[in-house]
Length: 301
Length: 141
Image 1 (cartoon, rainbow over the protein chains, first blue to last red):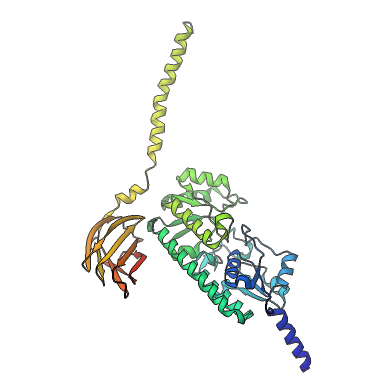
Image 2 (tube, one colour):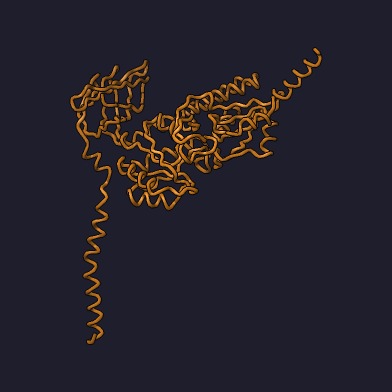
């Protein structure tokens, strides 16, 4: 019995703890977390981003090859806050081998209201308050997430503690500089113009930190046929609040948007990256934040 | 219509030229119809009293509001103040404050106090060793 127990312990250690010289295999369900673990882990990690840049994480469903990847990883990072409805299925695939960390579950939350057209993982009664899963729109949260990822890597490879700490500190210094840039850029925008009209309610954490009011207008995805009442309500809101620009999601109903801009005089403010990293300039976290903030300030100034 | 083709052509041009007058009036009125939103902020601008108090002298300072420098200078006294005109909405204002002290052997502080419309003053303090810069938020009392 003793021999069997010892064998099991040795087997578990061999499959979960990387051997000296081997890298830690990490699978990530978030482009932001993929960047964080790459920066903190450096050459001690091999990262596979299952959700790629430009892919909507709300719509992502893991395929069999993704589950195989998860089964071979030592650390799996998820956004958490109920964004990944398939998380239980993933846990089953990973078995006891990998550490599955829903990073967002360890971060402060704000609430958001569900609407008729929320994504299925947020499904609930209309107007119900749920946790807003878009925590990465707050730089403060990303700094906290960096420390969480650092600690998970240290658990897996204690001999690399100094390296992970040094990398995490360097990344946080960069995030502090980004935070300062955001504050300086936003200081160009009067506080009474900080009104964000968008159809994808993903900027609550950003709004909270920087004094914005969010007006999420419902029912304007390309799959919807909003009623004339919905359109009229949106127009009244935009005119009453004196909003200069609205920020559509990439899947907006163009006909409805044209009607709103014609009726209110508001312009389309440019696309914002709501659900993770994009391509080009927005392929890094810093690039994504600078793109979003620059787009917002330039359109509302 | 009878008559010379030239006269007929001239008649058509005259009618078109007459039609241009109301059309021009209409298009000019449309481009003037949408007021520039920034002019509303300028219209709503009021006088506020800014007072700076530094723990070390001399010091150089620069204060920006909405991307523009509203006050800068070199101070040889611990306290300087002036009135500036700016838009101070209910939501508050943000000032970008830069300070540089000649003495960088210890931490120095610069207090920025705003008095608006005879209300209770609001203040924020900036700290730094040799130099400091930050965005200070001032909300109405």
